[in-house]
Length: 278
Image (cartoon, rainbow, N blue to C red; front, side, top):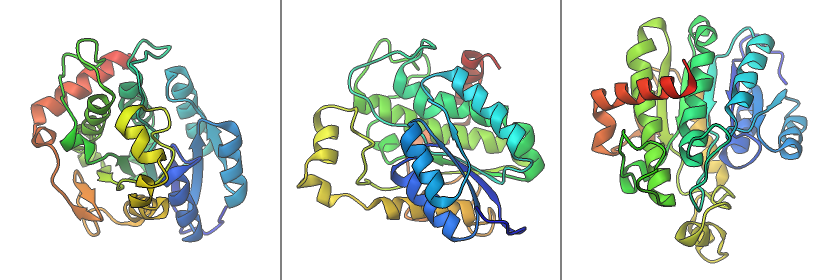
């Protein structure tokens, strides 16, 4: 871990594999202070040891662990310059977490919402950037219903994932509206169709595309997706990227028209806060 006084402290969730680990490697190489957050103890510690970086364990399917993570981060780091909410995934059958929420919704959106809000004061003090790993799935697969966030009435793995990725963008935009004047910037991005294990818990087409040795050759390398996260983490909002924006291949990109609905974004924030007791 670097001792450079000019280095920024960058917390990356979901950093034990995939684009999170790739971005962590790239940012550490660029001289940044990287903090590794992962769910799997062995893989998380392995990446941290490789980079000489600190690490923290948290399973986002358990909000008590997210609250403990926030407390640990506040105790350990007097500055958090970048929070990269990268943890998440796609699942097969509908499952409910120990907190009573649909797993895709909780692990991709609700846990990140809770972590970010619990870290708010530290993020404000640091003039931080918040980076959300979203996806083109927000436009292609979402069937978003603000009154059915837990997908009790309608569920498919694709729509649940698309909805969660749309929620990432709505959260980004509402975060900037609420906290932007306090000095916090935020952006969401599509990393690409990445050759990683992220769809290992899915079924059907998703699992086939990401695990079949033929189709997986068409996917983007994790290093490319990691570089897109690292670009936002290293960049200066207002100069290199626009706060509140959604990016693909390091450029502002189109997404679901619903992502631009400020009323929907505000309602999602309010519902999320109620769900996590804030």
